[in-house]
Image (cartoon, rainbow, N blue to C red; front, side, top):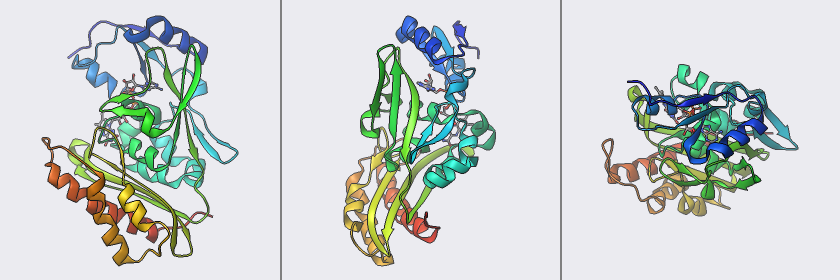
Length: 289
Ligand SMILES: Cc1cc2nc3c(=O)[nH]c(=O)nc-3n(C[C@H](O)[C@H](O)[C@H](O)COP(=O)(O)OP(=O)(O)OC[C@H]3O[C@@H](n4cnc5c(N)ncnc54)[C@H](O)[C@@H]3O)c2cc1C
């Protein structure tokens, strides 16, 4: 199928992007990697009157270290983020998660910002962003505002980005020393869709859990923090038995629904299993310096 008629703009500066988004408001949509938006337009599920292509704006695809904070432009390609030495060093969980965000050919084109702005409940990056306590910088004609993940992800395929605004930057605190992390998922890979997944980032003092953030995908309209499991582990020595016990508490954190791919019960059990595996896999991996 072909998309409905639209007007196409390819601005080269952030000021032009903001002017176009402001002028066309709700009628305009930013175009990033096009890996979700273009198929939706071809199926006429999305019918934006105006496309504002972000691909020519060089300012949007930089990765930098701002005094211990990883700063990502929204147009950083997913495969570029995975390969980035800076991302691997400052934020290993992000690099680990980017291996799962689709087939290689798709990741070469799809962007980190595009996936976060798309906010698919089974997308991996929103889960990683929640576990990493990312900050979303949104910009429009009225300037910039920043949001944490619980305020940014407002529902299925919906974020707090308003018409006239766009996701300008993602900021992620550098992993503390002695941090381990892992992303684990399960799904129908041939369809490119995860059923569920868990992102885990744990900071250790010896064998004791000093800080832990766990986030699950595929169990709600957006990523869900597994706080009951976190509470059980915080401040304690992480034995295998304790991890198995703590993971069971993840059932209390999630309230999934049944859909074509899995029942609600299956998704709960899956979250427990993935939480346990993610924590154990993280602990088996290298610690940050
Ligand atoms: C075969 C296939 C398999 C896939 N498998 C997976 C998978 O396993 N996991 C996964 O997570 N994804 C998967 N995807 C989705 C894809 O990888 C993208 O990650 C993602 O959905 C969109 O990123 P994009 O850069 O292509 O954004 P686009 O498709 O260009 O845009 C997506 C949406 O975000 C908006 N948008 C984009 N950038 C911004 C911005 N800076 N500010 C505000 N709004 C913005 C657009 O207007 C649009 O509404 C798959 C896609 C394909 C085609």
